[in-house]
Length: 253
Image (tube, rainbow, N blue to C red; front, side, top):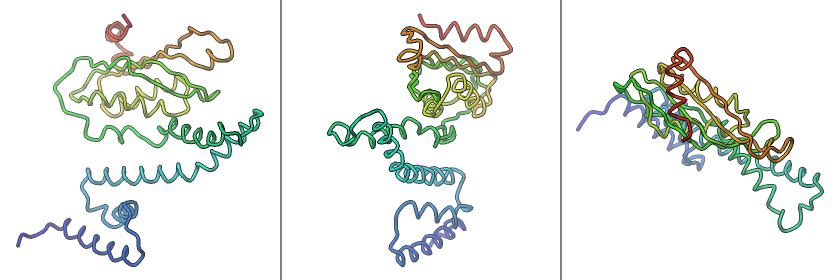
């Protein structure tokens, strides 16, 4: 009979202990298993499994937090509609407060995510030292001043230092920080800093061009106005030629 490793034995014992507790309490959902492993068997897991357990636990916690906060958000939207003079009992608005509450939770879901949630094993050792650019990444966010949308395109470039990231992950990083209440200037810098922290590249460049509904729908009501912001780190800040190459390659034709 093949011998089992110490880790397998410990996890097996932990599993049996949990099963007994579950039978006594009538509990067998994934959240409790996750919490139990975090308390009892977490130190025995590999780094990869630790990340998986943490992510599962965080995802479960976010879902529970969202559900627990829905009634308060729904009530707040009901108050807003009534304050506008609407009848929240009419057919078209019966479920609007709940829909609006769920929509706001989705539009701000970036508060519950980090770059490590999306990168996972998507950073690769690669002997590549030339510029990598992903341009025209669609971006949607909410202005924190008026809670109305601003949207546009994000261009990202970096000079690797023997490490590259899966290209789709750059778009995921944009999603994390744009799905929060934002100002465009801060969003631009947060994306650049996140990529720099994760990859430790020679340089990072981010440019965002966006239309702000707070300027288009209200206020000055300038329909064709666009706001452009940039963040340059490392070689892109220090070397004008590198910066010019990035800007030339991301310029709309």
